[in-house]
Amino acid sequence: MNVNQMMMPEDVEDVLVDGIPVGFSVKLRIPYYRGVALSLVENIEIKYDNEVYTKDQLKFTTKDGTFTFAEMATMTTLRWEFGEKATVFVPRLGGFGMGGHMVEATVAIRISYMGGAFPSKCAKYVSVTGG
Amino acid sequence: MAIKRGVSLYSLQDSYYNGILDLEGCVKFVAEELGATGIELLAEQMPVGSYPDPSEKDVDWWKDLMAKYGTEPSCMDSFIDWMLYKGRILTLKEQVQEMEKDLKLASRLGFKCIRVLTPVRAEVVEASASIAEYYNVKMGLEIHAPMSFDAPWMQRYLEMCARVDSPYVGLIPDFGIFQYQPNRINQQQALAAGARPEVVDAVVKTYKSGYAAMAALRPQLEKEMGGLNPAEMGFIMRNSRSAYSDPDVIRKYKDLIVHFHGKFYEIDPETLTETGINYEEPFAVMKEIGYDGFISSEFEGQGFYQTPDGNDTSYEMNELKLHHKMMAKLLGE
Image (cartoon, rainbow over all chains, first blue to last red; front, side):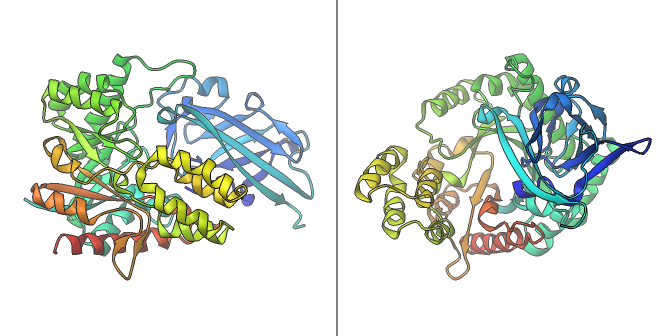
């Protein structure tokens, strides 16, 4: 697993509701060498330039559905598999917007044998207008 | 009686992650490119169907896959997430239930043993012994660097093994315990990043003496070298938890060994030797004691070879080919 590939620039896109950009989504792969139960996802944070979106603002979608972090804390049988792209919804009014922006994802998985959760970070410059 | 070559598919994780090899592709590579027969699987990394309860159809697919490539399941790696819930640790009973999930899955997939992580407590293994016997799957605690056989944690586990005296409770030595110096590629990358040769040499010479000597080396070098640069600090930190074990430990604990992990990072294609881990002496002891079972290649050098885009993961396959060439030579194949 290469933490630099946790998030790819082409996996960031606007989310429209009735044609209105209500946020953007980011696809993430787990920064660990195996899949885990969703209850082990201790933290996810998305930074858009200098705006910080914390886990209570985000929604997390896997092959099994879309969940809040409060829900995920109770999910011990649903899993985020190794290599699976999960989608994080970031509620940013106006969506990703024009131009280029720095997107930084932080993911911390609780790893029992390490005694806790350690954040992995991946930052990418994403541009929807090619500059 | 024979030492058989196998591969932990952990070795091919970057190829799997990047969609270059799927589970079948990994097994095919092991069989056709390495001529190895043992497949070790992290069921939570490359699940057969879904973990931990694949359908009968998925299990049949796996068995057909083994038959198709002439391979056999050797060992399945178990994790036991005792921090499954935030803010508490699973009780002993809950951890045994987690162990049972893995023993049952291993049995369904045809594995003879599971790898138990070093930090799993002896009490959990002891309380799982009768379940392991029921499923006919052995549990082997991984002896993973920097853990040594003399450590109190291991001594407690070994006392438990003696008390329980069951063929289902044992050990899996990881060859990382025979690492005697930082790998050559690690040294080269530190030098390329700006570490001074005197610092790299001092770490290489001290490594085998263990972590106490390594801990003392850092302040000494800081004083002698007028401070340490980031490349030097990184190299020292990476290699600070060294703990070399005498290969003779294999003889001492031979009756408890259920499997081996052939940890490696870099094979020198000229000499066919691991550039930091002693393979020759442990293999000699394994042959002397008549070890009858698998050794799985466990390539863990990905971090030394990865490129930013991840599209080329040929390093995993190249290093595995060299590792098997080396093991075949050591086994006189």
